[in-house]
Length: 330
Image: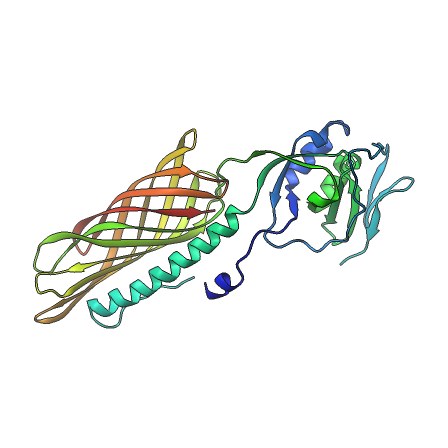
């Protein structure tokens, strides 16, 4: 997290054309494919050779034959230039409830700092469609490490299949942003805070601060697998600290969507620990916890959403309730 904070900055002025999009474009007539091109802005620019920029007056030249061979891409006539190439772990308090609470506050503060930094970086990125000139240079990096610079209008299905990564630069030709892509879940990091119930060894149940820190991956846009740390604490009747911590593996499903509003649920399980400072000393307990609940997300950006969680926890033979709200970054 410290390295992330120190290295924070805006996204690079460099964009990737996804492989599926490059294949789609290669099937379209060369003179129209530049009207809407899906791109994703890079955080760190891929190192490629500079290309001669084009402008609105650049003549559109359609190359009739582009061949793919084992060493790279080669075009007929004055073809493209070809260059050969070749978390945080679980924090289990070792002291009493007050020690666990103090450690959790530090972890939560670091997590909040990190999510703000990550959200600022991801929020500066553009993922969506742009309009280019048909002769806009595309930097192609092949699966064998070779590279080429080729106008968008020249790319055929064979060249697209050969390509591992396709890069375009806004300053190398006319560039017009059209529409931003909707929320796209892949790798994710989120921090949520609110209130949850805890049951004391004295038997009373009451609300106190509760936090969750999550990181994971969405194999599809609707289904995700996440690691979750949850912390909750409150004072008991002895004015001592009751501290709960849980370390879960969680499955999320968000199949419902209405405009920018998304809905779904989650379920998970993992070890749980409880430490409570009483007049008799620190009382500790551990066991398995099970969680389940519902989620609402408000889409703010292709990579950022506000998330609300309402769930139930079964731990230490008791049931607890969590009501959390925070930021999810994808």
